[in-house]
Image (cartoon, rainbow, N blue to C red; front, side, top):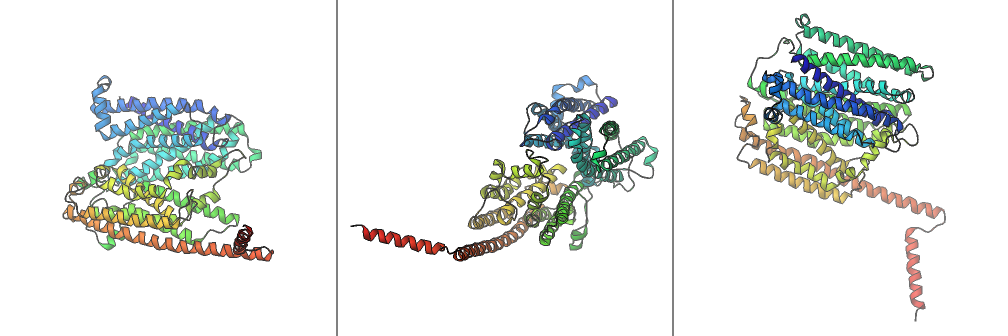
Length: 615
């Protein structure tokens, strides 16, 4: 039974990786025509369909065999409809596996008809989401350093899907298409390889006993996976070295190396699949079981003080990975501009860095740590993520930097990465989201939808729920302040007076929310914080009302700052418009042409003369 379970998990992963790789090649690596697939992209559709079929088979097989393994029953008993329904609707692991199977089916259905690049990108995102979903309920979720272990595993799977899937797609390309796709994939493969090595090392360090683990089969498989990864990185180095001189590339030999690389990757995935189904040797220093560790994934911290909040650090690997990627892309953009001879304002870089630091403090820093044990600290983290950090990110103008540095199409017909970003900004969905009323509804309306329904208590129960809330707070704040004080190009021009009205509305709605939260008489988390039995927390209801007052105070100040900034921008725009009119008038006068006022006076005189001529 264990071998069959491992076999279906391997088929699940390999099919998912190949699906991601096919979508990656069709959407980004091969040349498109005005945002649609060309003949080269259509050639990969057969690979996409076969990969999706294998993924669907592996996903459903994983559900059945995992259920049989958990129950310790025969395979026929696991096929019972009532048992399967209970597993995928009531057990967390079953829910995640069912979500993965649904994503595989969705991708398979649309693999027959998707031709637009945007559709392929969406399918690739759904594929990656399906691949990483079961990771949140892996056997590491109940151990210490929960956020570090789970986050590093998620990054590991995403990077592997892009790297392994991309190599499989390259091996499937024709001799004419491979020279077009390889240079672009080489850039992505470098980033993916770095992510695979770092995330794998962090995960192994967190879970393994490095003194005694290497005497076990688990340790030997880890060692074999490390050697395979090193060999793959070396092969990637040879690829990049050969690509330096395109005129001397032996594409026949290159194809052979790609095939060998794909085989090594398949073996590596097989070893990784075996590891996911095996218990790792305990790492020294693993904490004894306690209630907080079993629920949150970390031990209860000592009573909060200013020093502990400022200097404590519980790394959330997934958020750190997201922030590291954002910083790397931003720095790369600045470097590209500098090499081109253009200057990028230092103030924007500083603002972006401060915004990134604020996000890290609210998720992995002391504020993020204590937010898991106290609602008042959770509200502080919420305000930092939704009110303070977005201001720095918006003032950093990341989209402007991206539009100035992203690669354009490789010919006149290809949209390119930059063109795809522009198309997304000016799409119907982009225009809808940049409507000030829609942004306000997301920014403030989501507060009531989250905290005054059962959604908050539900999201607090899982790591993915915490991640969703953090990303939502950040995205909602970024969208709101992008419309109000953003310096990036906006597909919808919003007048300053409208911005001021929206800010006053946001301030009023936020104050009403805070007062309503302070007036509650029941716990909105359904007793989640009380269940942790934190000794220094005190009355959870008092802490909840304190969170409401903190949200009011921390929410109003950033909005007031944005209000002042909007007034300043309005005056600056009026000043620039007046100077423009003055320059236009002076230019017309220098050319002997009357200015606008003179033209208007002359028009009035002509009307007066016409009136006098009439009887």
